[in-house]
Image 1 (cartoon, rainbow, N blue to C red):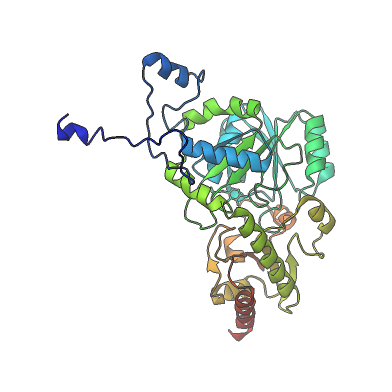
Image 2: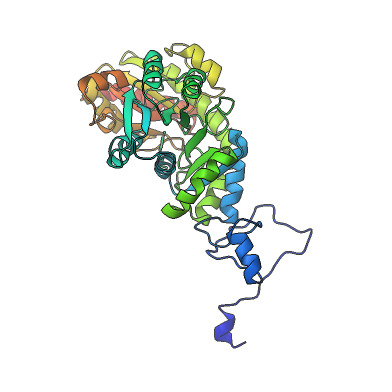
Amino acid sequence: MKKDSRVNHPPQAPLPPGNRPVVAPVYQSVKFECDDIDATLRVVRGEAPGYFYSRNANPTLRQLEQLLAELQGREDCMVCASGVNAVAQTLVSLSKAGDHILCFLETYSPTRQIIRKLLARFGVTHTLLSIEDLPGIERVLAQTPTRLVHFESPTNPVTKIADIAAITALARRHGALTVMDNTFAGFHQHGEFPVDVFVHSLTKFASGAGDVMGGAVIADRELLATMRPDWNLFGATLDPHAAFSLLQGMRTYFVRYRAQSASALAVASFLEAQPAVERVRYPGLPSHPQAALARAQLRDAGAVVSFDLRGGAEAGRRFAEALELFSLTASLGSTESLVLPPQMMQPRDFTAAQLAACGIGAGTVRLSVGLEDIDDLRADLGQALAAIDRA
Ligand SMILES: *Cc1c(COP(=O)(O)O)cnc(C)c1O
């Protein structure tokens, strides 16, 4: 072999039997080959285990998928390029023209756009209720044949708690599938409820470092298999290197999630005692309007705390801009603390009544609490609250 050829066919260094790496390698390869055509076709047709093309399957992605499925308590998982991608592909692959989706005012804004704009173009209808309106959910499911119920808990940003047992029971009774975006609660919670499909943004708690984007859909094998062919056509594959970073992030997932939940509770309690703060919403606080339901459903209450400033939008602006340890940006669940002011959270597609029901007020601020020292966080929040009155 000439050297020009050799660089394209470098020597392989396979591990001997019985020897393996402790950290699995990144399979940064688009293509996989077998020894002959028949063996290749068996892999391509799914008749034999193996890999062929990374748009459809890759061993590094598969490792992440198996881990997440096991944590969430379902048989299978498919990871993809982002959380929004996981939501979009799930809703598209489970619906067709003429289907009806029940969804909620408190839903993550891009998910609302997928249902209200994108799917509407293809003849999928929807009803938008408040997640607190259980009689409404019962009425809609009884009156309108419904394919999917899509919901979240705790909701963004005001941490309302969906009654998962009630919603899944009503959906089952009326023949609807439930899709739950479980990004806020994480992979270790809510698995005991009969939710049909869990979707997650891996960009948040899975990574922790906030350096990669990803999404996951987790369900039992048969249901996921019905969605897979569509997904292969959308082609929004996760890069193996991103999957590797996410696997590294998952090693500290439980330590981070619990430490951030403990700090978030400390931050929420601190804020509750401040005169500039009208009310605080955190699922771990005894004062949460659904504290009993939150306690029954959540072992760890999460990193997101939201609260209302008495001074409204202007106070929110001064407070958020005065913070030093909290980055003024989107996302949540990362190891650094984040803040979103009211100006960056007000939904623009709501009527006045819908706006009132969704719980985002003129002075609503959302925090995602990270892993900084809790005394530093309290001091920063204290000086930013003081800055509201200094202007
Ligand atoms: C962030 C988020 C998403 C979208 O995830 P990306 O990875 O940013 O695309 C979906 N749902 C919820 C609840 C989120 O917080």
